Image (cartoon, rainbow, N blue to C red; front, side, top):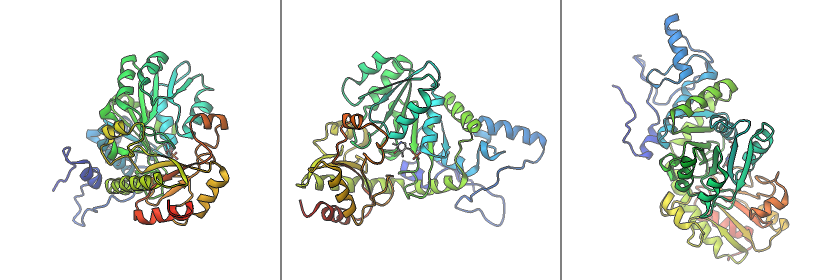
Length: 411
Ligand SMILES: *Cc1c(COP(=O)(O)O)cnc(C)c1O
């Protein structure tokens, strides 16, 4: 019996069943879970077949998927790419060895080269800013950054006339929401390639290709994997030509994801919907709790009604679906107070990542935004009392109990 993925399945079903199950003719049975293929090379029946396989492997011909050599592709990596491409509604995806490798690939595929110009949102993930400044600027790329979260975003893009526009669905750590439709519309109008880092939202919350974006990137290390045990990245393309570039660069640069990591991320993806649902409901309750606490000055979470982009968040992601990430400012705005708070936590882990099953806390000034000058950090609105929380999927009462202990009693 041939079992294949149905195009009309809901996202939840698609993520569980993944890509097409491998069909075997063996009377020994076919595994329900794809084995991990460690082979660096693949044999084909004869030289004619090998020639065809080379062609199909290099071009990514989907009607005749073939594997020849590990750096060009592997069944586990391919299975992950297929399920994420379908989940995002793209023509295809390429998985890389990390989120940063994926971002680098997306920027190259978008055509960023000497003499071209990129307009990026001001609040980008710290390492992405470093990538632009330390790798692309020395190559002769003009990098301009603006606050792209306001109503004047269209005017800014038109005035700058960049070749590439780069944004994140939600900013880090202040969780500002980008107006995806406004950005992609102007990018199209001026002929710029639009890229969005959708790590914080995942296809469960928003599918940027449906909002007109050309390339979507993820650090799969975060919510897609979800278990803190694998580093990976993926780029999904809305256009065939961009996908071909992504594949070509991945092969030349040797940036492809390993089969082990691909297996782990794909396993994580099966429970993505369940986890995201819980991340969102827990984060909203935690945000509401913190908002009323006397030791807390301000809470940044787009699910709260007083968040400046609450309406946009609801339009893009739906009611009660504002993600698992929030940040807040302690009333006592100091590094000492922030460290004291973090060191008192017993459940939430002080680790620099996000999107794991467990709750994580980080202090942006010493982690994600460590390499930025203090003045720049402040101009982004990241104060000395600012703490980021990646709300996990534990029982929310335990998370709130832990925060209460660290904040020094009930609000
Ligand atoms: C973590 C992260 C990255 C980088 O991903 P790695 O897997 O660590 O290379 C990029 N963008 C965002 C928004 C991230 O959170």
